[in-house]
Length: 115
Image (cartoon, rainbow, N blue to C red):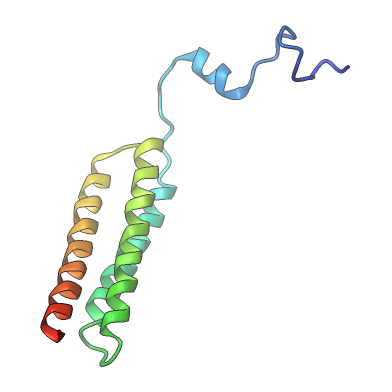
């Protein structure tokens, strides 16, 4: 058997996660990748929300697309919070949920008014 065999636990090699946990420095590396992806999702959702009132016949579809974009934004903001948290994440999260709730309310009110 080789030295890197999974059954050989006393070979002195440690995995990357265990080695990082052993360092214990706790410093987070500044990485804004997920935030910028979330920001793009927020902008796309806000544009879909705004255009849904201008394009005749596509309003419901654009509102649903807006909700999906905002859901993706919230997901990437959660990933950014785990990677490196900073105050702007919370501001974009609040705006994201505001647009998502507005789209949901418009869909619900529209369905009630139609039926």
